Length: 392
Ligand code: FAS
Ligand code: PHB
Image 1 (tube, protein in one colour):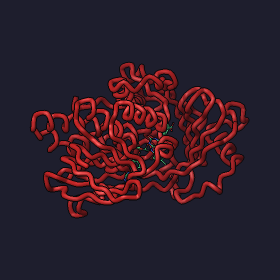
Image 2 (cartoon, rainbow, N blue to C red):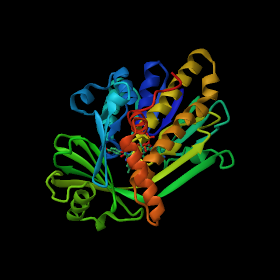
Image 3 (cartoon, rainbow, N blue to C red):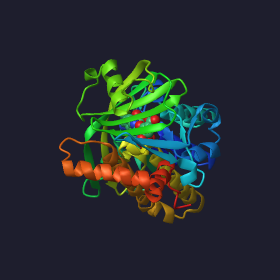
Image 4 (cartoon, protein in one colour):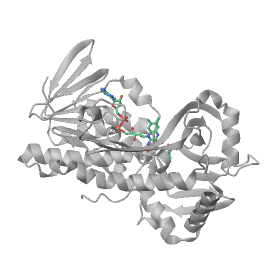
């Protein structure tokens, strides 16, 4: 098999990239280790920045999103019985956030890729990349029980944090920046009407978040130990903690319902640099992960492939490789700004084991400052809806 761009991974990064390249007439093949059902049912993110939604519209894959998404026009932060209410469009020149599950985005992208005749192989597990410094890199994978090889001009490593592409870069070339926070997020989906707004809470017992997927389905999170087990969290315990941490001790505001999905996600920041090596270009979680507190993981993957697709299109159409050479530097500027914001929100909203009384007072003072400062609250609002793409 031979193609111009071999794309490893059919998550948001790989799928958006494939559609952008296909539209420009650049031949690409997507190799995904899991089944279609698996990737389309994997519950993860839910908040789409304006830029992500605009890209979906630009690619003509936003019809269902327009029908089904919910709009975040405000963001609430509760603490010590007080409420920070952020008017997102008023603080960001009219921008809002869109709530639409990542698995729905993935479904729409896969459908478009297949309808448009793009090559997308499921249950195709990539084991090795070769020749990254040559002009003919190869991807070695197994599909249908057979060992296969895909010859490419370029490889896009979109295979997430646990993929094989980042490890294909020699360890002495990569710098790893890593911070594991002393907490995890227990996330649930429930058949219950959501709160009116996206609501974060900093409570003495820990962080909580009330989000949603539809007017009938809530997406709810509570801070837990990083190595906690879902088995330790009965439905009753989850609802108890949510009522307490969200400031609803009388259990009148937050409506309960059947919990039909549970999972624990680590809270971690990780950046590997550079994001390119020879003919390999990493995008999304393959290169970086951010704490979910900022709701940025998926959106940052999209930002990467906007840059990568533009550089690849220029290269294949004109032979100019200046943008490709600058790919990593261009992406890392945004990556670190998003890491900054996600780290700030994580530190602001969580109570970590061992937090001293001094640190707690500083944290509460920061929350009070945001409550009373237009500048401080505007900073959160403009990051939440998504910073402008500087490279435009
Ligand atoms: P992905 O991990 O989505 O996709 C990589 C793809 O590559 C996968 O389909 C994988 O099967 C495939 N792959 C891996 N190895 C391969 C191989 N060897 N061969 C072929 N294919 C291979 N972000 C938020 O903004 N908010 C959230 O609430 C949130 N919750 C999350 C919960 C969990 C459990 C996880 C893991 C992440 C969460 N994230 C969240 C972050 C998440 O949304 C990612 O940022 C997003 O999926 C990044 O997309 P990709 O870079 O495409 O990586
Ligand atoms: C979600 O809806 O899944 C969500 C919302 C806000 C976050 C993280 C996740 O910060």
